[in-house]
Image 1 (cartoon, helix red, strand yellow):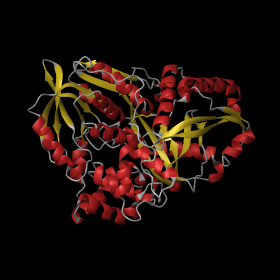
Image 2 (cartoon, one colour; image 1 turned 135 degrees about the horizontal axis):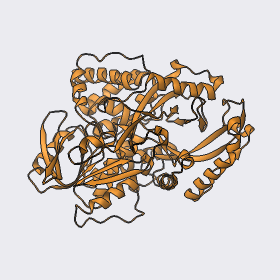
Image 3 (cartoon, one colour; image 1 turned 90 degrees about the horizontal axis):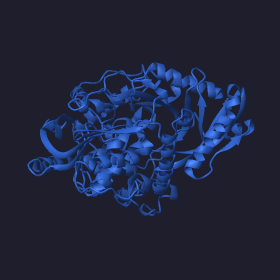
Length: 555
């Protein structure tokens, strides 16, 4: 199926049932986050028969809850992680070139204060190395007056200067979705809300999976030459039958969202938190300002949706109040929150989460290939490492050349329309690839206008509902488009218009809409509201919550 419209899940489930009695898949990828999506896309490109299974929605997990940065990581240099940084900087440069409109350069300012005066030359060395990795110069030293001009509301007491440098920002969920849709159009098969309940073994080696349709409860046993475990924080759950030690240290990173009107920010800014010296940053994103991130060990149940804690909320608010005192930002100014659980590779030490390595590892355990760690920025490098392991299980597989594109090449005028300016057209091409033209063509009158307060077009909501595998309202408003993170109460004021689109494109009855909208409001308040401002789930939501608890996510 080249698009995932109404009835797509039933069609794919029938296809899988028919396939169960045929020769095995070459590869089954478990996990629909950026690691799994990257492996899926590259394996399909190699000509393999590939199935991707995700326990919840595509990109449900960490891959839609990151800091929205495609970056090298200056702080990794200060920790001696040179190889990680070099790799990430080069991948950042590649993605900026290949996916304009999806991955965009972002100017950063690092503000330095009196206690750090002596660290100027250390920073200078790090930024010089950064630019050498990128093969272009982007950094420069800023006098205190230059920092103030770049950031008018920044703290000036003790300011001794700063640096400008360049990273990139993105919509992380759209990276995942573009990879998956490109893989599907090239012949792969992908299914969401399809948790893997068991790993199948043949003589002690992985030979397939037992998958359950979370919507109907049906199960199937599917065979494969190799199974790729790309389930992020759930990696060790799938490894239990073949692994002898845990790989993952789950670390939570949380964020606050402010309106750009209340927290105007012309550039991204990085600074050290006064309480513990950790790096914190704020960046303009999708018409809002995002502040993050925390780094705390995540001890909650892996099946529960992560949420920011009261302590993390106060920690980030304290950072903002200290760095931008004139704005007098408070709890009531927070539009939304999100938290993601990073699958950091554990080393058995008691080091602070901030000090943990962000390198990826690939472990082949009798046909179960587990990928752990890594960064959003380096998904393509990680995918190629997994493919090298697959050569031992899928005879004849040949890796594409080393400089193959991470995304398909798309004409830059693929979404041109008189109602769209150049920036809006490029944004659509970057996020939707070669489907951008079809999205524009499918728009109803007036739908090429943005949703008020966001850069999202109404046409994007319609296209997502029509062709992008939406099963529930939160799939649409939190991942296909991001209005649920950009507007107060998750965009509750938009719901009457969203209802019309969903009922037209998804065929939802009035009763189904009422159930979905109530579920969405409750989910938003629980996972994206401010702690303490939530309420218990309404009746009718409990059944889906129970299914969620039994469905490990890989996204």
